Image (cartoon, rainbow, N blue to C red):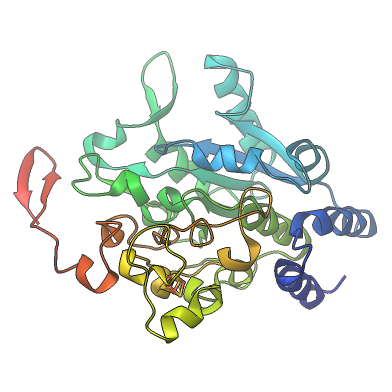
Length: 322
Ligand code: SF4
């Protein structure tokens, strides 16, 4: 299958009645692998500072289900979340696979990277002498990987972990690996299709087409607002008076007009619903400035920024005004 055809399929499936992207992906991946004599995508997955929501979302992938992704699509060489090994055994595995698959593995990072206190707010392992910080692990492995994928908004841009006052000095992976391309699959959490679809693209065609924030255009090209089912209410200035009303949620704090993602037609939870359909506003979780620019969540978009009180930031040992 040609790359253009694959992109077309991703889009059309998301808009069709059966919009089950990953159900269609797996057979194509298998065929392509067989045809090109390719092996599975070798993946090293580091979970750093986050809530774990992205791996839970990934585990809830439906078509294919998690077992199929792991057995047929990716070779999960190391994951401090999913693996059974612990302590020195786990660290040995990490050292072995990163050397064996050097320049061939895909590094998946889930979570932000704290910079303050030399990165000690997050360590992924302990050696007999010292902790291995997320900062050290991501810097080292990121420079050895073929591709780097940041899964979720914390890993992509800092997200909730870097929200004010950000006492850990957390940043997204792109700020730690500034000299190389990091593919950002943002979302809080990520939609399983966005992540599995990105891995499938890497496996079959290499780097997908990215937007200005390095997110795959396949899933982030258009704003929520553009395809929202309540758009006609917005155009007619017919706004909800309270949460639960059927009209446009702009008055209730919706950030859809400045948020790129395909939630209105791909949907969530086994393709059943998404926030606006469930009568709450989009909170803009895929955005570079989420959550600070989205809060207070239920305040209209044009009033959010002006309502913000001066914040106190933690910089090193000192507290200072922003
Ligand atoms: S609910 Fe949000 S995304 Fe939908 S039309 Fe209104 S402002 Fe736009």
